[in-house]
Length: 405
Image (cartoon, rainbow, N blue to C red):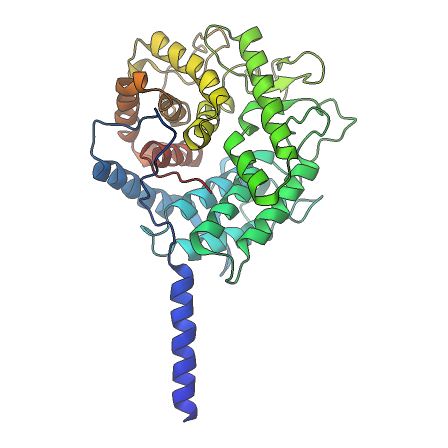
C-alpha cells in the first residue's frame, strides 16, 4: 500500500513538473501588430518561423553556458576577461521566454538564467544585477547596467505569461520587485530620463545624461501595466519629447540619435567624444544602433504615433543613403548621416534594427524584404554574442512572433 501511494505521489509530482513547463504562448505565435504594419512577404510564414527556430537552436548551443548545477549565463566569450554582462543576460532571458514551445526545455533554461542573475546582485539593490562577471564567475563591477536590468525585468513579465507564477519561481512577484528597483535607482526623477547605471548619484556630472538605447517605451508601458505605477508614463512621455528634440536639432535630415545624450536638464545635445566609451559617443554608434528596434517595437505593439514619427525619419534616410541596397549599409554614422570612416563592414547589430523600424509602414515592404534576406544570410560563427543576439531578437519581431505582455 505504501509503495502504491509513493508511486501515485511520484506520478503527481512528475505530471505537475511537466505541466509547469508547458508553454501557454508557444512559439510561433503569429502576432497581429498595429494596423498598417508589415512583415517580410517574400517568404511564407512557415519559412519565417523555421528560419527563426533554426537560428535559435544555433544561438542557444553556442551562447548558453552552465555556471553551477542550477545556473546558466549568456556567454560574453571572454572579451576583456568578461564571462557575462547583464545586457546579454537580459537578451537571453527574453529570447528563451519567447521561444518556449519550440524549445521544450525553455523553462528549465530560463530558470537557470534567472538563478544566475539573482546570484550576482548589484551593490545597491538585490533586485538589480551586477553589470559584469569574469571567467571565474566573480563580479567585476557591482554597479548595474540599466539596459540589462530593464530587459531582465521585462523577461520576467514574459515568463509569467508563458508559464504562470505558481511554480518554484514567482515570476510576477520577481518582476514587480525588479521594476520597483529600476524606478528607484535607474530613473532620473527630475527629468524622467533613464540613468546609465544605478551608480550615478544626483551630484554626479552624469546624472542628467543617458544612453539613448535605454529608452524602451514598450517595456515601460508593460511596467506600468504590471505595477500600476503611472510614473512610467512620465518616463515614456519625457523621453519621446527628448528624442524628438534631439532629432530636430542635431539630425534633422537623417533622424539619427547619438549613443549618449548629455545635459538633459538644460539643453540636450549629443555627448562629446570619449564621454564614456569611445570617440564616437556623440554619433550613431554601437549603442544607438539599437534605437530603431527599441522605438519601433512600441508602434508594433501599441500603435504609438510618436514611435512611428521618429522611425519614419530614420527609414526615409537609410533607404535614400543606401539607394535601397542593403550592401551599402555601414557600421556607424554621424548624426548628419555620413558613414563613420573605416566602418564599411557588415555589423548585424546595425542591420537588424533597420528591419524592425521598416515594419511601421507598408511603403517599406521591399526594403524590409531585402533587410531580412541580407540579415539571415550571415553565419552565426562569424559574429559575437552581441550581433547574434540582436539579430535573433529582431528576427523574432520581424517574423511576427513578438507578443505583448
